[in-house]
Image (tube, rainbow, N blue to C red; front, side, top):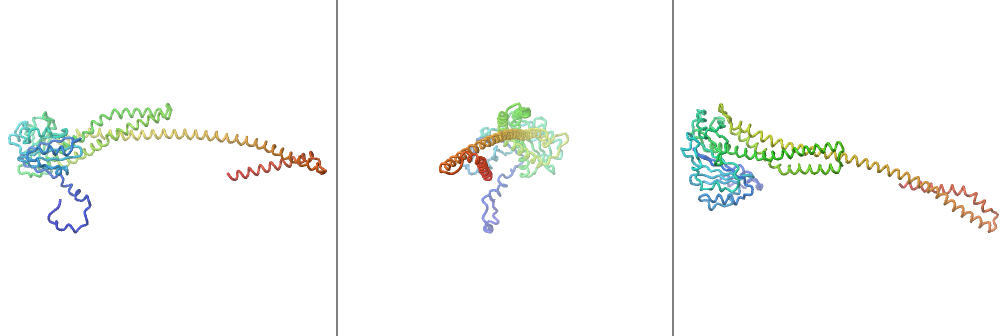
Length: 444
C-alpha cells in the first residue's frame, strides 16, 4: 500500500526486492471489521478441502449486484463486499474459509428478548448460506447491542434470558471494562452457536469490530485445534499395540529366543508402522499446537475481568480445551519416544549381529591359520623330499661323469668319487634351497 505524499520520490531508493511490497502489504491484507451497533454478525466457517477459489467466487457472484465479480479480486484471500443493508466478508485460509455477514439487529431481538429467533432477520438471499461450498465446521450468530455496563450483574441476567436460560460463561473485556461478552457455547438445532456482546452507547465501530473478530477467532481456532483430538484417540490403541510388540521384541532379543533375521524383519515392520503414522499425522498435530497458541493469544488480547459467580471465557477454555491439547501433545511425545526406542532396539540388534560376525570372522581366521600351518609343514616335508631327489640326481650325474673319466683313462674309481660327493651335494642343495627361501620371504 503506497502513500500519495511521497509518490514522486520513488527514485531515491534502489530497486525493490521482488517480495518487499507483497510482504509489506501483508499487514493490510485483512483489515479489521467496522461494526455499527446494534448489529447481527452471522459467521460461517467451512472446510475448504477440494474447494477452489473459482467455486467460491461463483457462489459470491450470487449475491445481489455481484455478477461481475472477478476471480482476480479473490487472489489475496480476502474480499469485503458492501451490499444494500449488509456487508459480506470472505477470507480463505489454508484449511478453511470463513464468511461473515454484518447487518443491523432489529430492536425486537436485542436485550430484553427471550431466546429470540435470529435467522428470519438475515437479509441474505434465500439458501445462500446453505449452499456455501465446503463442509460447515463452525457457525455463530453474534449479536452486538448497547447497554449500561455500570451494572454488569443485571446485564448478565438479561443476557442469560437472551440466550435461553442456559448456563453461560461471561466476562468484562478490556482494561477499561468496555464490553461484556456472554455465550453458552451450545450448538443449537439450527447448527449455530450464539454469542452476545454488550457495549456502551457511542462505542467506536473499530472497537466493536476488534471485539467481534477476537471472539469469533477464539471459537474458530478452538475447533480447529480440536481436530487433532480424534486422530490422537485413534492412534492410542495402535501405539499401545506397538509398545507391547516392542517389549516382546526386546525380551526375545535379551533371551535369544529368535533368529537375528526374524527379529530384524519384525523391527523393520514396526519402525515402518510408526514412521507411517508420524508422516500421516505430523501436520495435524503441529496444526493443533499452532491453533492452540492462537486461542491463547486471542484470549489474552481480550484482557478479561471476571464477574463474581461466573466463569470467564479464558477459564472455560483452560478447563475444557487444555485436556484435549494435553492428549494430543502426549500422543506426539509417545510417538517420538516409541520411535527412539525402536531405534535403540535396532542398534542393540545391530551390535549383537556385529559381535556375532566378528566372532565368526575370528573363527574363520583361526581355521585359515591352522590351514597355513599345515600347509607349511607339508611344504617342509615336500622340500625335504625335494632335496633328497635333487641330490640323488646330482650324485647320479657325478657318477656318470666319473665313469666317463675312467673310460677316458683317468685313474679314478667312479663309485668312490660318487660316494665321497654325496655329503657335499646334500649340503650344496640344502644351502641353495635356504637361499631361495630367504629371498622369497624378503620379497613378501
